[in-house]
Length: 416
Image (cartoon, rainbow, N blue to C red):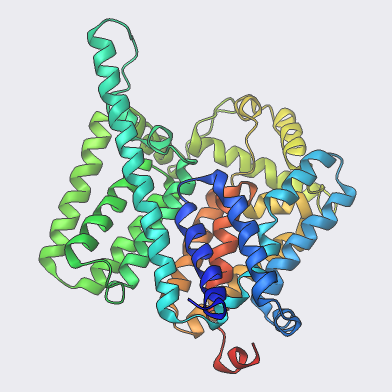
């Protein structure tokens, strides 16, 4: 292969490797981003591309959000936490630049990148279930020998005990996007034959339910509804419905932790008063959001500072007497509120514009995968502070930039 041919392929293969690695090996992600950056600056760097980048609203908004966090380091009290936060969010600044070559890649190459991500999710799911099965069998053996008193049983296949590589909410978000890819590109992804396609989709569906992430379950419900509308096959709709209802019923009656999450969510929906000492997921979120809103209302216009979010939240938990939240040192569990505390109203506004503009752009371009991605993000950002960890910010920055850049108009492509 000639060197001139190898150059764009190097960038593409590194991107596929990153997509595959996202759900699996967090330790490999930073070096892959470094290699991807080197590949761009060594083989594909041109000032004309950077100038075009400055005219692209979507990527410019992402860079602007990062710059607001960078400015927030000036007035933050907790400098070490602020610098660490900027390091975690660095991909928001890097990807809009190093993914520019994808504006020249074919739709077939983009689909291959999506396949890489789906295969990474599949590998992660298989490993997680194998480890959960091993722990389940090992526990039964220990109990039979009298070496172990606890009995997690089926709970080894639930939530954080199943999600080996990351927090279950992030893993559920990944799987929801992978499931959306399989639905939307069902005809185009020739790699996935019908039997293989349905098997992987079913495995992802079961995994999302077992992960018991509330945001994941909401998104799964939307995906299933869309699937039913598109299918219009009564037998398939009935069969899938029976399987899902049976699985949910089994988990509810035989997995105490799953039943506890459902009951906890039900108490919040019925607006039963929350115990200020609680740290239970759904009830705690109401108290956290109340505290976060109190902070945003009384703080300065530009926020408390990039590194001070956790500190001011803990102070507010103490003032409100929320001992359960204080003990676990929980973040805002909502990225819009988390951003609002850190960099104030400008940060919240930019983050909101990012979602509204990208959603508008994808709808206008009739990009179903783009619309699905943004909806998945909005729901997850409403339940978790997704940009506070590598698993969330890299996923967001990578696919957001990729989907927006590959939707360039033909005129813009020629300028590149």
